[in-house]
Amino acid sequence: MKHKKTAWKKWFVGIGIILILLIAFGFFYLRLNTYQALPEATVLFEDETVKQEEDWISVTPDNFSDQIVLYSGGLVETAAYLPLAKDLSNEGYQVFIPDMPLNLAILNTDIIDEIKEANPSDKSWWLAGHSLGGASAAIYADDKADEIEGLILLAAYPSDENDLSETSLSVLSIIGSKDGVMNTEQYAETKDLLPNETTYTEIVGGNHSNFGTYGFQEGDRKSDLTNNEQQHQIVQVINDFIIDQNQ
Image (spheres, rainbow, N blue to C red):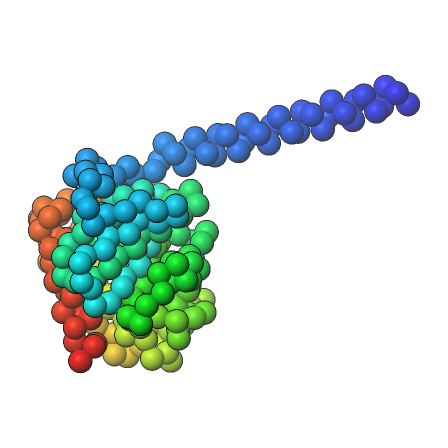
């Protein structure tokens, strides 16, 4: 009997070691495959308008009209979206980029609620997201459409389970004409899940990677635009859209 107990104990210990190794391997794999923010993005932490808070980065200009929460793309560092956030703040928006578990927005789609609670205001809140971050933002919008003014999809589309077509949300969808990562067939098929009044914009020559500042993403196509040029156009489209919706 004692021999059997010892055998079972060794078996459980062995399984425990295997699980620890698998978790460690998974963490290492995700870390190895996470796109890091480039220096031109991280240098913006020195800007006085940028603040690294416990669970998100905020960019707050002296005066702002609306507030934007930006969900990062899958396995992309939060700071990689600082240049885009900074440019948006220069147009008069307070922008928040939340940290996500394992850099996967799908694991915490409701974090905008925490940001709103910590930053109460009477301003309009817009939820934006790049790639998987956009799909994650659509999950939130499907569940709590009344909590936000609108949704901004950056090289992204909702999943089949998230039908926003009957909501009153203002929705903007921006893609790049040379995007090699986004599934263009799914993008076209899921247009029926968005409101009829959705605004669609294509950045001619833009790709998937340049929505952030993390370098070239595997599987993407080369952009005809520099990172700055593409993001400048993105910011102008977002700004024009929000101004139009607020009129």
